[in-house]
Image (cartoon, rainbow, N blue to C red; front, side):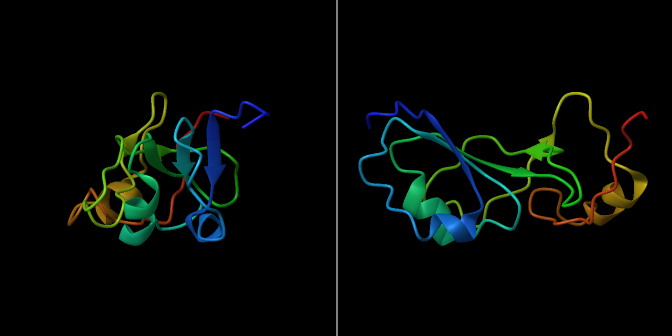
Length: 111
């Protein structure tokens, strides 16, 4: 890869149009929508793949998963990133299944 790209940030649905072959040294950060198991299975072999979650209205990630592995199922939204505290609404939405819940985020970030 002549551009020496080492991180690809993409939505899972857009990644379906890309070929992971030849991108072995590229770490992948998925975000913007739920990441299904077939995307994880296709992209995780041989590279670091992380799923991130953040409110649609802003371009930040509020949570990130640990590196994903093929065969692990749909990607979890992960844990809060440093400096982010889930709102009570998010904590409630995550109470039944914190690893795979898809809450409607509201950030508790300072003004």
